[in-house]
Picture 1: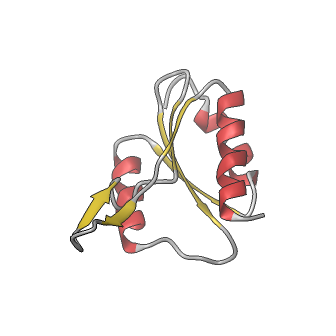
Picture 2 (picture 1 turned 135 degrees about the vertical axis):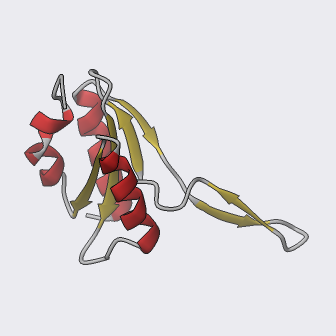
Length: 108
């Protein structure tokens, strides 16, 4: 499964569970004058979701053994410190399925 296929599968599952989902893109575009315009926030998960009960969830999709970047590790700590979930899905949606109870919990 490619990373884009994994992102699509995670989005589909979160939507099925009633979450409000946003696909996040980060990066930069080079202008005609050679300047770069950055978009997105470094470290943000590929997917941001708000659960039906108001919990903040970010999902980072990785294929194979690609590690989290330093910015992603810092972001994970910030999200978790604020009682959100930062979930890393590797190769399939099994981590989302495993954490479904936490994702859809009424209290956390």
